Image (cartoon, rainbow, N blue to C red; front, side, top):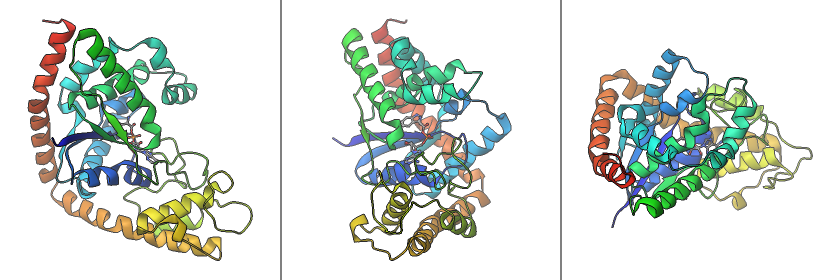
Length: 321
Ligand code: TYM
C-alpha cells in the first residue's frame, strides 16, 4: 500500500536553508513514493510572542515557498484552516502527561529564554502529534531537532491505541542522510534557525545572491588551515562541507580544498545556484497571489475531508458523543 507522509513548517520567521535541506528537500523526494500532505503550522507560531500582521504575511510566504520548492504534487494547506488539528490536539493533551511534556528539550530551551511562557509552548508537541496522527502518516520528514517530538507522537499514538483501541498509525521520522542539522554560519555549534539564530549566520530562502555570498564568505571557520569534515574539531568547516555536498550533489568524501577561502567560494556558488530556481519560482507565484491562495483553500477543504473519518474514530474511541 502507498505510504502516507506528513510534515509542517512553522511561520515564526522566513524559511531558511536549514528548513530546505533538513526537511523540504526530503519532503519533495518523498512525493515519488508516498501520498504527501504538507502544512504551514501557523498555530504553532502562536506559542511565542508574535505580531498578527507579520504572522499572516509569513504564513502566505511560507506556503508559496513550499510550492516554489517543488511540493506542488502534494496536498498543501494552512493548519488553522482545518479545525480538526486543534480538536484532536485536545484529545492528545488528555493522553499526554505533564511530566513528559515538561521534559521536551525544545520546551526547556525556549522556556528558559523567556519570562512569560505561553501555556501553548508546553502543549505544542500534542498539537504536532495531532497534525501527524490526523493524517495517519507513516513517514514524517523532519530535521534532527524534531526527532524527540516525533518520538513523543509515537508514544502518544501507542498509548491511545492501548487505552481506547486501535485508532492511530504509529509514524516514523525520516531524516536526511546529510544536513539533518544545518548549523548557524556565525555560531557553528548552534542550529541555523528562523527565529533563534543570528541574521548573519542564517541563509533565508529568499536572500539575494549577494547576501548569500556575503554570509558564506564571513562564516566562522576553525583554527588551523586544513579543510576536513570533522564536526567535533571543525564545526564551521564541516558545516560548509555539508552545505556544499548537499547543494552540489557530491559526496563529502570527494571534496578537497587547499584553503578555507576556496571552500567558501565554491560553497557560496553552490548555495546560490540551489536557491536561484526557488527564488524565481516564488516571484512567479507571488505575481498572481490569487493562485496560491486558491490552492491553499482547496488543500484545506481536501484535508478536512480526508481526515473526517479519523477524527470521528478518535472521538468514538475516547468516549465523547
Ligand atoms: P520548524 O518550523 O522549526 O522547522 C521546519 C522543519 O525544518 C527542520 N529544520 C532543520 N533541519 C536541518 N537543519 C536546521 N538547521 C533546521 N532547522 C529546522 C525542522 O526539523 C523541521 O522538520 N514543530 C515543527 C513544525 C511542525 C511539524 C508538525 C513537523 C508542526 N507540526 C508535524 C512535522 C510534523 C517545527 O517547529 O519545525
